[in-house]
Amino acid sequence: MPYNPGPPGLGHAGSYQVSGKPFVSGNIDLSAYTSGPLEISFPSVTRWIIVRNRGNSTDNSKIIQVAGSANGFTTGEYFRISDDYNGTGARRNSTTPRMELKMTKIYLTGSSDKVDVIAGLTGIPTTTIRDNWSGSAGIG
Amino acid sequence: MSIYTPGPPALGNVGSYQVSSKPFFKGGLVGDATIRVIEFPTVTNWIHIRNASTLLAGDGPRISFSENGMNTNNFFDLYSTFVENDTNSVTLYLKVAKLYYKRPGSSNVAFDIVAGLTNIPTERILNNWSGSAGIG
Image 1 (cartoon, each protein chain N blue to C red):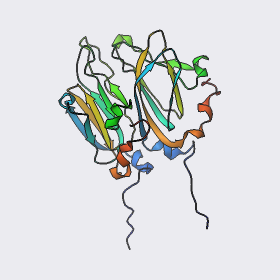
Image 2 (spheres, rainbow over the protein chains, first blue to last red):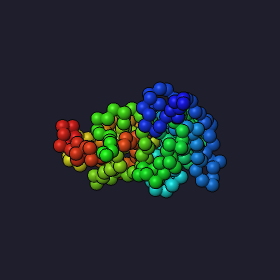
Image 3 (cartoon, helix red, strand yellow):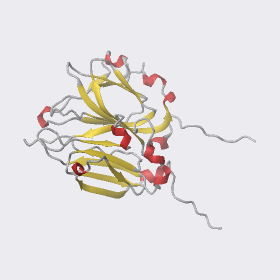
Image 4 (cartoon, one colour):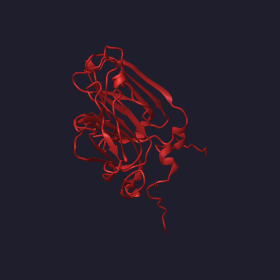
């Protein structure tokens, strides 16, 4: 009988040592999502995620929030990304570092009209993370 | 018949730091005059501290890894970079169980935390390294 090892598991170190398969969702207008946060589902478990806020304002009013569950926005389990430009030539810290996180979804809310999500994907199936860690401390 | 149960990974388990991490987010934190602590559910792989003040040149928090470290100069301040009107941030690849913070000056500061967690239990680090050189 042939050996069929199946897909890699969540702790398979080699899946995180190789570079990721690209995933890009760009130019997202978050201001259009008025009924709740935007959920972005990844096709497989992420190796890393970068979120950019390219919105412009003079008063940082297009700041956005990022969480690992919709509940995280109400439980304080989120982080913020300033918008990109203050109108006088200076730029704000509007891009996250390469966050090496294994996730299956990410949630965004805010009034920015230009947000990019860039991720590197593993070949690990999303079913290996139950509910995108929801219910864990730090996720909500 | 005995059954092999390996138990949770230890502090030096290389694979725990090679794989990507379980996320931990904490937003809307306010540093005031009181020393406050964030306790992570498991040992961290890395910590990213974001100064997300809505003031363009707003300062970030004072950070240490023990309460005593705030009084023994074992801390650092996450000031804004005024020239660029930047909201400063830093990423630290550190294995810790706790992070202490307060305001660096007389004004309260606002910031957020993003951390990557391992599956290593926090009990593996005695008192979050307190008492070690560089921790306080």
